[in-house]
Length: 116
Image (cartoon, rainbow, N blue to C red; front, side, top):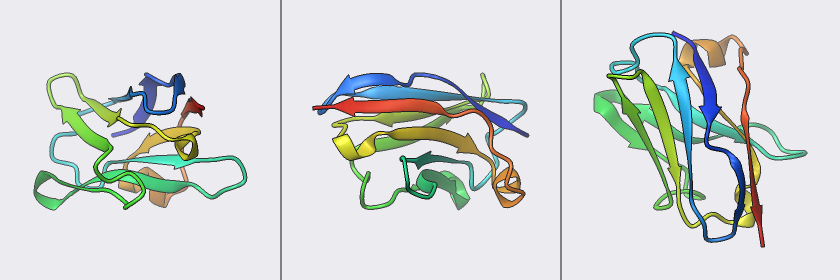
């Protein structure tokens, strides 16, 4: 299965919300480790949300309580709801599977820019 960011990015004021979407090439319902990542200018790529075993989720403290990862098995789409966006959330956002991540394969990301 491969994932590709499919929309939802853009320019938003601080405190606003965006929902990113990611289209999968196959069934993503049972795949652990699917995740959203971001890369800000001059910084390494970092995880912002993942599915863990048992359909649980994990978030770093920087986004916990503000971001929510979800997936729709009917449409093979994964989402990232981002609320209360902050300037430091500005980055290119990517979705990926554990397999492709391990092989260094990354698809097209989507730009999120938060303005003051």
